[in-house]
Length: 109
Image (spheres, rainbow, N blue to C red):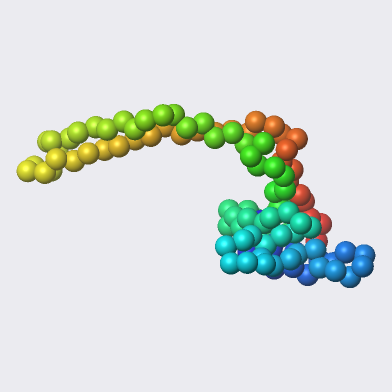
């Protein structure tokens, strides 16, 4: 969720009147929502009608990052004479591995 969504989620309480949001107990720890750590992602939309403002789940199980071993280096002695330029590339990819591990939540406002 993004920062604006976090501001709204901090106000939510359970039936006993306890806040669902708990701040980080130590520096470097993540705050928690119902006991689960929260990571801020500014790419997520704000809470609005029919907006998927929160992604919840086990991202290590649900998303697979494929990292190809090694770097590819291209030496370019011609473009910036008398200097030699080096271009490096690395192939990385990823995708959803388990759709049941990650759920997007819609809020009705």
